[in-house]
Length: 247
Length: 274
Image 1 (tube, rainbow over the protein chains, first blue to last red):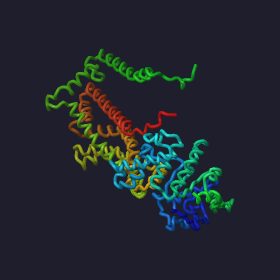
Image 2: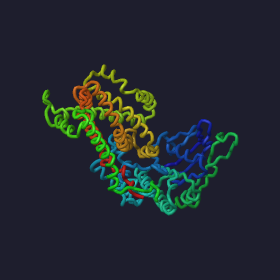
Image 3: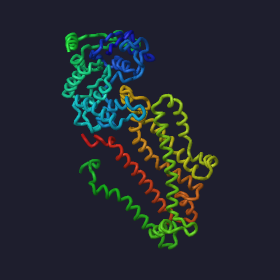
Image 4: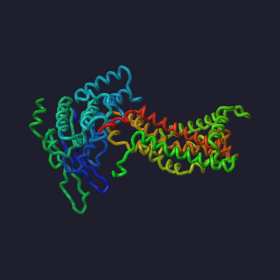
């Protein structure tokens, strides 16, 4: 379960309002695309969901509990770049989530526990099609493969919410459509909520069950920072929601 | 005629062009030396190459008549011990303080101004203080090396930790990592090769501080020997010693570079491609 409730959230920096009057209610298991022009606060909103930043006013609740103000294992994340650890191989990058969980002091598993984690990681790598590359370092992978690795890394902790910050922004068109397929399959299998920031409107409508468009409704030309952006359109894509409910 | 920026030496050419300055220096020395020796067979300033061999044989292969020690090895051992301990302590300090300052905002707020000020104190200016406080023995020399090298290493490492992509630290947290786990699994493994590179850069200063301290107060050591025999203008000892020190420094640099290549394969990964 991962019902998200956003109540009158504002985010202000000195001399600048980034987000204002943001209220949303998102059901569990939805795939939300956050779209809008640059600098309209969609990434800021994602960071607040992540716990990297906290709202200046208002509250965000996940399943009725206020969001903890730091990143945690219930919310996985994939950034556009630098999401994977360059000093670990593909397999090590995936099992590290389990190692953090099960080995508080060394952060490293040995023996039978390690083999169990490796088996689990192999399964995830199979799902994303990276098994053949398990011994490579991220620098030896293509951009699309790195993003698949970043997704499988997040999946091993089975997060309730997966946050994606322009995950496919740096990929070519062919790789992108493969990634869409993969992402939709994983979303259906793992039954998690997904929030994805994207520049690409078409991408948003292709993937999401709900498109949230961020924009400024009020603009003061003398003081560009005086008003913030908010969700101007909250579009549920009914047919996809119906398909999701049927599945 | 192609532009000179597009002309590249071949493999043999690289060796030849690299060796050329060394050869030229050797020839220049031989010519100048023989000219001076022709004028005065007892000239001490530019002694012939044979006298270097004789001096090395005397110091390294025969025991000193007074003490019975093989002086060159005693000197080398003493200097390397001081240098090794000094660099090890400085590196350990850098590892602990650098990571803490770079990663933890409260420690950065508390320590980075004081480290910034300490790193501006000229180490040679506090050498008298070190001699007074720690005595003239080994400790003051080691402390001088630590004092001279550690602030640079700490600041360098702290900057590199702070420069790590924020995405990696956030990602580790979303995988459930504690601060300690982030340090041991994410930060340290990536910072060790950077630290080793920084140590390579600080080998020069470390030798500088070592030889200065030995020149002022010591009873053995490479720097001590050079400054001792200076009184007799014994260039036949000084020049081989300088060459020996240079070789030691060069070898330790090469050794550290080898460690980086051997133990951190991910540094090279993907660089050969595309």
